[in-house]
Image 1 (cartoon, rainbow, N blue to C red):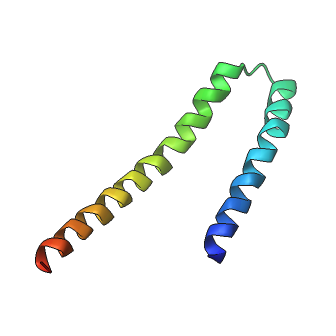
Image 2 (cartoon, rainbow, N blue to C red):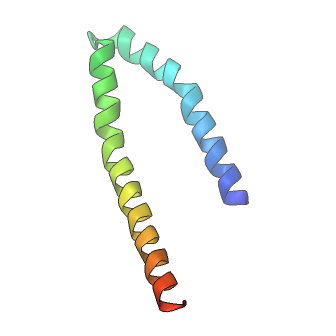
Length: 70
């Protein structure tokens, strides 16, 4: 329960700082919004992929345990 609340708080903190970071990046360089979106996706993609792999592994383990214990 505590872990979930901490993850939600972390997500809220990260969500709240995106505007500040974007403003800083746009004012200090010639970075365009599309480029920033691509960079955010490129950084997040490995984490999403790892999470999907973990979910698939957990799902397959649940299916295997259901077959072992009828």
